[in-house]
Image 1 (tube, each protein chain N blue to C red):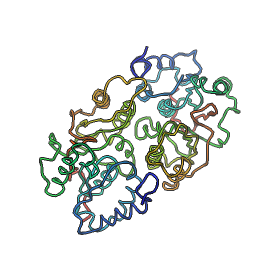
Image 2: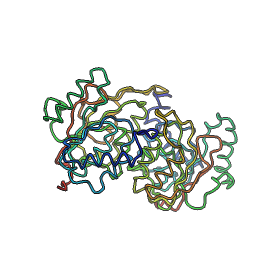
Image 3: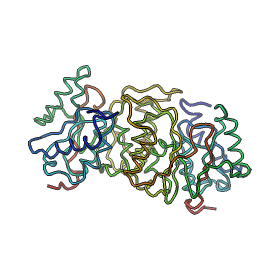
Length: 236
Length: 236
């Protein structure tokens, strides 16, 4: 079923998600792909969480960040990592295998290599669009890893302004920059690059810049499990 | 002087703005054009407001909304309306004359025609990017007029999700939709149009939809003076 931009009407997508969340035989909900639209059902997915939602892993990246944020806040187990659709990338089978190695046996070799404490990962544009909403995560003391794809540098600059001005983001321990890919042309040319933009806004806002992160919209994208410490008390 | 994307380094742009704000012989600061970048100096422009800043009008639209928001919050006199650069549009001389008629003699015929109480106008993408920052305006009881330009409909949908989820926005009396121009192709085609998207998010969020507004990135763009009632107590 297709409904314009989406794989189906919001009600059908929400019902399918909730049915999977409630299914006791499901160990992990692995989002198939990114795109746009999970924000349209994220808040509703948090209402009256079905029994069984708390004993599984929710896994994906990019647009799935809207669900990651809300689910983590609600006490569920969330991780960032490659999705089934990534198999279409060059080298994508390694990405999908990496995810399976985490989902099935929590293989630590799949993790972003410089994790040394609680961390969360978000697409920057997604993060900007969930600030101030009921989905906003608790980033206190967390390493915040960001990446982006398909934006002009002026949009990256604007999102960094927005995100780093937020008191919620300023609670993070550090901000680390993943890859920014498929940057669209900027007219006129934007001075600097993604690193100088992110360093600049970290400096302005007093957020520590922790260097690069091994995540992005690519086959090398690594796993970032969200911290259990920052979840609200689980309901189960 | 040009500095990459911008008309000059932030420090030079900020100094020029503050010099004009402080100049007692200046009655109005009419922003010359939109684009991107006023957010980079808006917060600094509010620090230690120069004597004389409070007796003038700040006038423009689009990216100037970052300054509008912060200046209005600081107690300054702000209005939305066409900018000098609009003279380049077809029919643009009428737009510029309309602004001058407001700036020079507060000609009520230039106003957005359905204003019937306190109102503010913002570019939707700008508004989304200032939520949660120190620039966020007090929209209590205000008619919020929005418009946008050069975005895909999925971005419009995402911005409407973000904006209508904000408690600050839900304080508005009504939301009214100006024109959304130069909509970029959406792949796949997005079901609906800008009206159905905005109506949908108003319905979901409980914000009253007040119909269309006569503003936009075009020569017909009308004047929307920000309300004196919602300003903080002026410092002068």
